Length: 217
Image (cartoon, rainbow, N blue to C red; front, side, top):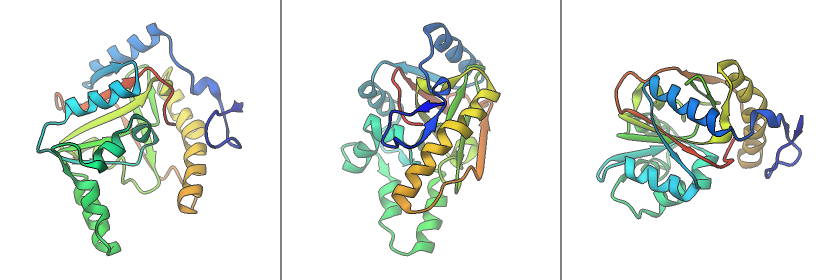
Protein backbone atom coordinates (compact mmCIF):
# COMPACT_ATOMS: atom_id res chain seq x y z
CA UNK A 1 0.00 0.00 0.00
CA UNK A 2 1.30 3.47 -0.78
CA UNK A 3 0.25 6.96 0.09
CA UNK A 4 -2.35 8.77 -1.99
CA UNK A 5 -1.25 12.16 -3.32
CA UNK A 6 -4.30 14.13 -2.22
CA UNK A 7 -5.52 16.43 0.48
CA UNK A 8 -5.80 13.36 2.69
CA UNK A 9 -2.17 12.55 3.32
CA UNK A 10 -2.95 10.17 6.18
CA UNK A 11 -5.09 7.90 3.99
CA UNK A 12 -3.24 5.04 2.34
CA UNK A 13 -4.51 3.30 -0.77
CA UNK A 14 -3.28 0.75 -3.30
CA UNK A 15 -1.75 2.77 -6.13
CA UNK A 16 -2.18 -0.15 -8.51
CA UNK A 17 -5.94 0.49 -8.32
CA UNK A 18 -5.48 4.19 -9.09
CA UNK A 19 -2.93 4.12 -11.92
CA UNK A 20 -3.38 5.48 -15.44
CA UNK A 21 -4.09 2.75 -18.01
CA UNK A 22 -2.09 2.18 -21.17
CA UNK A 23 -3.55 3.30 -24.49
CA UNK A 24 -4.43 -0.31 -25.31
CA UNK A 25 -6.20 -0.73 -21.96
CA UNK A 26 -8.12 2.51 -22.48
CA UNK A 27 -9.15 1.50 -25.99
CA UNK A 28 -10.33 -1.88 -24.72
CA UNK A 29 -12.36 -0.18 -21.99
CA UNK A 30 -14.01 2.18 -24.45
CA UNK A 31 -14.88 -0.68 -26.81
CA UNK A 32 -16.43 -2.74 -24.01
CA UNK A 33 -18.36 0.20 -22.55
CA UNK A 34 -19.79 0.94 -25.99
CA UNK A 35 -20.64 -2.73 -26.48
CA UNK A 36 -22.60 -2.50 -23.21
CA UNK A 37 -24.63 0.44 -24.49
CA UNK A 38 -22.74 3.39 -23.03
CA UNK A 39 -21.84 6.34 -25.24
CA UNK A 40 -18.19 7.22 -24.57
CA UNK A 41 -16.21 10.41 -25.12
CA UNK A 42 -12.47 10.49 -24.37
CA UNK A 43 -10.78 13.85 -23.76
CA UNK A 44 -7.26 14.84 -22.80
CA UNK A 45 -7.87 17.53 -20.17
CA UNK A 46 -10.35 18.62 -17.54
CA UNK A 47 -11.10 21.73 -19.58
CA UNK A 48 -12.10 19.55 -22.51
CA UNK A 49 -14.18 17.44 -20.12
CA UNK A 50 -16.28 20.46 -19.18
CA UNK A 51 -16.77 21.28 -22.85
CA UNK A 52 -17.85 17.69 -23.49
CA UNK A 53 -20.40 17.79 -20.67
CA UNK A 54 -21.81 21.07 -21.97
CA UNK A 55 -22.13 19.63 -25.47
CA UNK A 56 -24.17 16.69 -24.16
CA UNK A 57 -26.82 18.76 -22.36
CA UNK A 58 -29.24 20.79 -24.50
CA UNK A 59 -30.51 24.23 -23.62
CA UNK A 60 -33.64 24.17 -21.48
CA UNK A 61 -32.92 20.78 -19.91
CA UNK A 62 -33.33 20.30 -16.17
CA UNK A 63 -29.97 19.36 -14.63
CA UNK A 64 -29.08 17.78 -11.30
CA UNK A 65 -25.70 16.63 -10.10
CA UNK A 66 -24.52 14.25 -7.42
CA UNK A 67 -21.55 15.11 -5.25
CA UNK A 68 -18.36 14.30 -7.11
CA UNK A 69 -14.80 15.43 -6.54
CA UNK A 70 -14.23 14.85 -10.25
CA UNK A 71 -17.04 17.24 -11.18
CA UNK A 72 -15.45 19.83 -8.92
CA UNK A 73 -12.04 19.28 -10.50
CA UNK A 74 -13.30 19.70 -14.08
CA UNK A 75 -15.18 22.88 -13.14
CA UNK A 76 -18.70 21.58 -13.67
CA UNK A 77 -20.01 22.37 -10.18
CA UNK A 78 -18.85 25.98 -10.39
CA UNK A 79 -20.21 26.28 -13.93
CA UNK A 80 -23.61 24.93 -12.88
CA UNK A 81 -23.89 27.20 -9.86
CA UNK A 82 -22.64 30.35 -11.61
CA UNK A 83 -25.56 30.06 -14.01
CA UNK A 84 -23.64 30.72 -17.23
CA UNK A 85 -25.81 28.26 -19.13
CA UNK A 86 -29.36 27.81 -20.39
CA UNK A 87 -30.31 24.88 -18.15
CA UNK A 88 -32.78 24.58 -15.28
CA UNK A 89 -30.50 24.21 -12.26
CA UNK A 90 -32.26 21.74 -9.97
CA UNK A 91 -29.28 21.69 -7.59
CA UNK A 92 -29.76 25.38 -6.80
CA UNK A 93 -33.50 24.94 -6.45
CA UNK A 94 -33.12 22.03 -4.03
CA UNK A 95 -30.58 23.69 -1.78
CA UNK A 96 -32.55 26.93 -1.65
CA UNK A 97 -35.21 25.07 0.40
CA UNK A 98 -34.84 25.70 4.13
CA UNK A 99 -37.13 22.96 5.44
CA UNK A 100 -35.24 19.65 5.76
CA UNK A 101 -38.22 17.45 4.91
CA UNK A 102 -39.19 19.54 1.90
CA UNK A 103 -35.59 19.57 0.71
CA UNK A 104 -35.36 15.77 0.98
CA UNK A 105 -38.52 15.44 -1.09
CA UNK A 106 -37.13 17.83 -3.70
CA UNK A 107 -33.86 15.88 -3.84
CA UNK A 108 -35.80 12.70 -4.59
CA UNK A 109 -37.75 14.42 -7.35
CA UNK A 110 -34.49 15.82 -8.77
CA UNK A 111 -33.35 12.25 -9.44
CA UNK A 112 -35.74 12.39 -12.40
CA UNK A 113 -33.94 15.34 -13.98
CA UNK A 114 -33.62 15.46 -17.74
CA UNK A 115 -29.88 15.14 -17.20
CA UNK A 116 -28.18 13.84 -14.07
CA UNK A 117 -24.42 14.43 -13.96
CA UNK A 118 -22.13 12.56 -11.60
CA UNK A 119 -18.96 10.61 -11.02
CA UNK A 120 -18.17 6.94 -10.62
CA UNK A 121 -15.91 5.00 -8.26
CA UNK A 122 -14.53 2.39 -10.64
CA UNK A 123 -14.71 1.32 -14.26
CA UNK A 124 -14.01 -2.27 -15.27
CA UNK A 125 -12.06 -2.74 -18.49
CA UNK A 126 -14.73 -5.35 -19.26
CA UNK A 127 -17.32 -2.55 -19.54
CA UNK A 128 -19.07 -2.18 -16.16
CA UNK A 129 -19.42 0.89 -13.94
CA UNK A 130 -19.32 0.64 -10.14
CA UNK A 131 -20.39 3.26 -7.59
CA UNK A 132 -21.72 3.51 -4.06
CA UNK A 133 -23.15 6.11 -1.69
CA UNK A 134 -23.99 6.42 1.95
CA UNK A 135 -27.47 7.77 1.17
CA UNK A 136 -27.97 6.76 -2.45
CA UNK A 137 -28.62 10.35 -3.51
CA UNK A 138 -25.89 10.24 -6.14
CA UNK A 139 -26.44 6.84 -7.70
CA UNK A 140 -30.22 6.67 -7.41
CA UNK A 141 -30.64 8.39 -10.77
CA UNK A 142 -28.22 6.26 -12.74
CA UNK A 143 -30.09 3.00 -13.42
CA UNK A 144 -33.55 4.40 -14.20
CA UNK A 145 -34.82 7.63 -12.63
CA UNK A 146 -33.04 10.27 -14.70
CA UNK A 147 -33.94 10.91 -18.31
CA UNK A 148 -30.27 10.96 -19.25
CA UNK A 149 -27.06 10.34 -17.31
CA UNK A 150 -23.61 11.84 -17.81
CA UNK A 151 -20.84 10.06 -15.90
CA UNK A 152 -17.47 11.82 -15.72
CA UNK A 153 -14.29 10.03 -14.68
CA UNK A 154 -10.55 10.21 -14.78
CA UNK A 155 -9.02 7.20 -16.52
CA UNK A 156 -7.28 6.34 -13.24
CA UNK A 157 -10.52 4.62 -12.22
CA UNK A 158 -10.14 1.98 -14.93
CA UNK A 159 -9.20 -1.44 -13.55
CA UNK A 160 -8.96 -4.94 -15.00
CA UNK A 161 -12.40 -6.39 -14.33
CA UNK A 162 -15.49 -6.24 -12.15
CA UNK A 163 -13.76 -7.89 -9.18
CA UNK A 164 -11.02 -5.27 -9.33
CA UNK A 165 -13.64 -2.52 -9.65
CA UNK A 166 -15.33 -3.70 -6.46
CA UNK A 167 -11.92 -3.85 -4.81
CA UNK A 168 -11.21 -0.29 -5.91
CA UNK A 169 -14.49 0.84 -4.40
CA UNK A 170 -13.57 -0.73 -1.06
CA UNK A 171 -9.87 0.10 -0.93
CA UNK A 172 -9.49 3.40 -2.78
CA UNK A 173 -12.78 5.27 -3.14
CA UNK A 174 -14.23 4.48 0.27
CA UNK A 175 -11.20 5.39 2.45
CA UNK A 176 -10.79 8.73 0.68
CA UNK A 177 -14.51 9.54 0.67
CA UNK A 178 -14.74 8.57 4.32
CA UNK A 179 -12.02 11.05 5.16
CA UNK A 180 -13.70 13.75 3.06
CA UNK A 181 -17.07 13.13 4.69
CA UNK A 182 -15.60 13.46 8.16
CA UNK A 183 -13.85 16.69 7.19
CA UNK A 184 -16.90 18.13 5.42
CA UNK A 185 -19.82 16.85 7.48
CA UNK A 186 -18.37 15.44 10.68
CA UNK A 187 -19.76 11.96 9.93
CA UNK A 188 -18.28 8.80 8.49
CA UNK A 189 -19.22 7.65 5.03
CA UNK A 190 -20.39 4.12 4.23
CA UNK A 191 -20.75 1.81 1.27
CA UNK A 192 -24.42 1.55 2.11
CA UNK A 193 -26.00 1.56 -1.34
CA UNK A 194 -24.02 0.10 -4.20
CA UNK A 195 -24.57 -0.01 -7.94
CA UNK A 196 -23.06 -2.25 -10.60
CA UNK A 197 -24.13 -0.70 -13.89
CA UNK A 198 -23.55 -3.53 -16.38
CA UNK A 199 -25.47 -2.35 -19.43
CA UNK A 200 -27.46 0.60 -20.73
CA UNK A 201 -30.42 -0.64 -22.75
CA UNK A 202 -31.77 2.76 -23.83
CA UNK A 203 -29.65 3.98 -26.72
CA UNK A 204 -27.96 7.32 -26.00
CA UNK A 205 -29.26 7.59 -22.43
CA UNK A 206 -25.98 7.18 -20.52
CA UNK A 207 -22.80 8.95 -21.61
CA UNK A 208 -19.38 8.39 -20.10
CA UNK A 209 -16.78 11.17 -20.37
CA UNK A 210 -13.29 9.77 -19.76
CA UNK A 211 -10.50 12.22 -19.00
CA UNK A 212 -6.86 11.27 -19.56
CA UNK A 213 -5.96 12.63 -16.13
CA UNK A 214 -5.91 11.36 -12.57
CA UNK A 215 -9.12 12.77 -11.13
CA UNK A 216 -11.29 12.13 -8.12
CA UNK A 217 -11.53 8.84 -6.26
